[in-house]
Length: 184
Image (cartoon, rainbow, N blue to C red; front, side, top):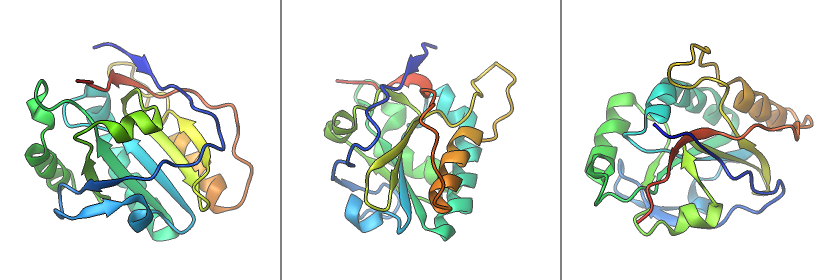
């Protein structure tokens, strides 16, 4: 299980626009359709990555905690499904329903969205403010499979709380770590 860090694109970067199919509703959703009033968390995840599986419950909790307060979450799977069939849209639907994802789970078949965001790993997190400017990119917390660090989401939660309450978000941000996005 290789550990690949996120690329840590510059803070202030504007969120690239996209329209992708939601594997749960079957609808085409654009970033503009599903962005939050106060902020938007774009997450690159997949079904099979042990790093994502490790934090899935916390992702659901983040959605349940923050979406009612105006920060919407969006999950995107950009993996090559020919070589990683466990990440195909039909299985994405099953995973989202089984885990109760309270956010859309979009499929980036062309991988153009992952490239536009310079996403590198799963999970990879990008938090944008109400103007869709990047305010946080980095890890959920220090938990990784096998390291016995509790999964709390503390790093990302601190950034999301600061965004909600108009406080300064620390620029000392640690990269996320996970499996590489499976490029074609």
